[in-house]
Image (cartoon, rainbow, N blue to C red; front, top):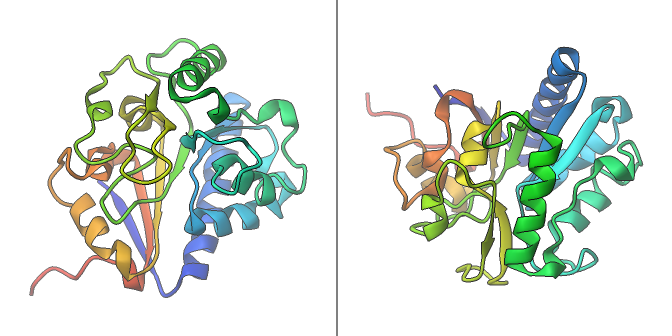
Length: 238
């Protein structure tokens, strides 16, 4: 069952999210000695990353991965890695060797193949590899990571780990994304949404699973959703 929390504003969303991530990472380290966290881009996760980056202890023993990346250099303003570098990673709490960047500059196919190998080597024994927590935003169209409505990537199968995208409906068109199978296999997904422009997508996500709303295909029993009042779904009719 999806856990949905509604907060009065975006700052409270970020603080609740940071506390959730910190708790999940601590539990993972206690159980397995290491925590595997995957990040997404976007303004809402960005503030959460700032809060986490200010707490060095929260990130101890954490391997940082990425849910998706645009095929741009890491210094480009569109890069999800750059966002993480300027927020969560800015304080140096995570050593460089524990940060696993998607190499968007290699292009979608080569970059995806390389990342799939790296993730499989770091997390052997399960197909697909199992991350402890994936932080996700949601687009107004219901997309998560770079998995877009009706895209062929949604049908990639359970063995798929990382996929190249050449026809993203949002610029830039070339991207790299974790597969739906990897998102569904994660021990937890944390989805964040703020603003009225996300309200319809959040409502659709909580409705019937559909390839037209990729977020609705996440494993709901392991999904935590934190939204502000503006993005919250309407209350059920009395």
